[in-house]
Length: 124
Image (cartoon, rainbow, N blue to C red):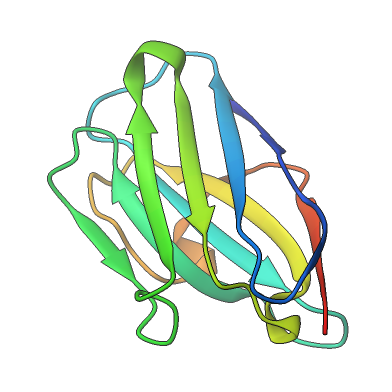
């Protein structure tokens, strides 16, 4: 049983950077996939990026891949989401999610385990 805990959200001005963390507790496998999603008020949950813990597979949303980067620290069981050049439209609750399919997939329904989310607010 895996638990995920996000942290690192906050209130920043447009153009700033933030690094979100997703700590994984419990037994994990190198083939596990971790994804980041976000949900703005009144909108559906949106895919951001996904990677497999062995680093062999990754996928990013086309609209964000020039500003957002996901990295893995297996020694710390933590996945990081670096966000640069933040815009007000990036304001959302950011969630990490895990799956044992061995594939970095983009659908929210593909992921069985979710963290509680961390709020990111970007002012103009």
